[in-house]
Figure 1 (cartoon, rainbow, N blue to C red):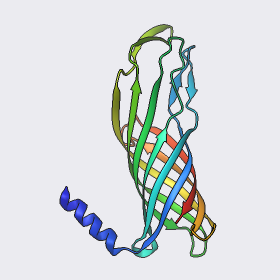
Figure 2 (cartoon, rainbow, N blue to C red):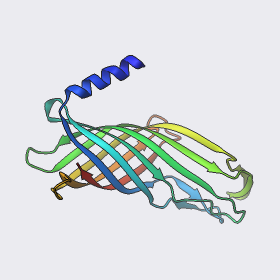
Figure 3 (cartoon, helix red, strand yellow):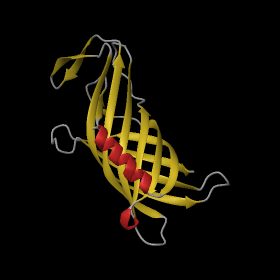
Length: 197
């Protein structure tokens, strides 16, 4: 593992640094949460921040890894009370490919790792389940899961912003989480405003 880390750092050192970026935006998971009636309700948009760096890669491609944090805004929505928080840290290994020589539009693609953490007060909840009910258990401490994703998106650069900011742009990205598991596969999307330094 140390050898892989050292080789990765050596390769990145040999590449030309392109830009450091900070993104602020929202994430929208496409999984569902259950409400009092037992119906599904879409998760709301959640705030997101990301930090990234871009290196010119071979053949005109750009290697653009990013580290980010999302604090999910959904909480329990049942009559039994008790709150939980969900947050996610992620590391994306994306590449950018210009869609033409003069266009500020880039195709973004790669893989990512997500670590989702849920923290709650614990306890059991009876929830509607079809014609009957089921017992669900809330976490009574922090629980984490790690997943893999396939990423596909678009970056659009808007132009320079000022003396300290090289460029600004918008970014949209779709994540296919657990792409190899047809039962647990989920989708999530992100939209960000980005400043490049």
